[in-house]
Length: 277
Image (cartoon, rainbow, N blue to C red; front, side):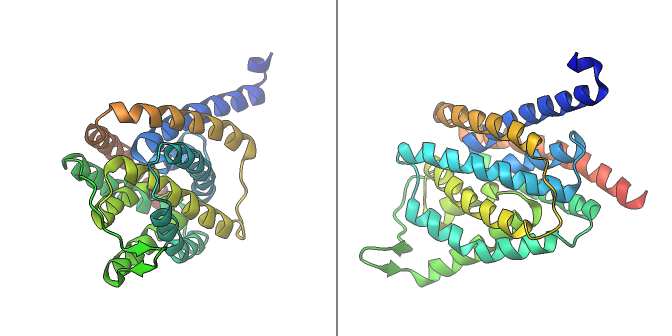
């Protein structure tokens, strides 16, 4: 009887789409340590008809919860550098707050044009990352609590990168894991799987800050959709986290880069049409 009711059928279709997109988002985050929101935002806008501001805010909820669960999973395997993750997340807070404030006043269609540009940049970053061999772990102790030690030069670089990633999170509703993972490997010398686990901790912090900042603005969230979205994303993240040890991350990165270019093209065409129409 649900399918005979147009309203009920529409709601059911929306929930099914939310579950399917959640599975994709979770799989991407669990295997690559980020990139889930890159899939979530266009899907929420073009498949589930959410306004851009609402879609990017919903993305923060989904990414934040999924990142927390993923970080716990990687943490149990000893693949999270807690001190690095907490410090990186704390340094990103200012950028996340500024970005979230800016998103509240930017036209939604313009936001999607800028998001399409971001997709292309992320695709390039993912493709480049996929062509590099996995680094071996190198001790680069820029921050040590006991006894306290701070490498000021490296700390300045980490702070700059973290602030930029925080801004991306707040403005676009993306966690920034696509940038956090390379930053952790290049700046701190972490091998890829440890960088993925640590990035999930950072994602949890930046997503929470961006979400709290946006909550003060005129944002209405579709909680039934979120409740369908989040469990599927979390489940897929856990499965992908286990399977990622058996897969080549470089090949995953390049495959994801190709997918992002296609999504960027679709997003750009639709958003420019809306701006000029």
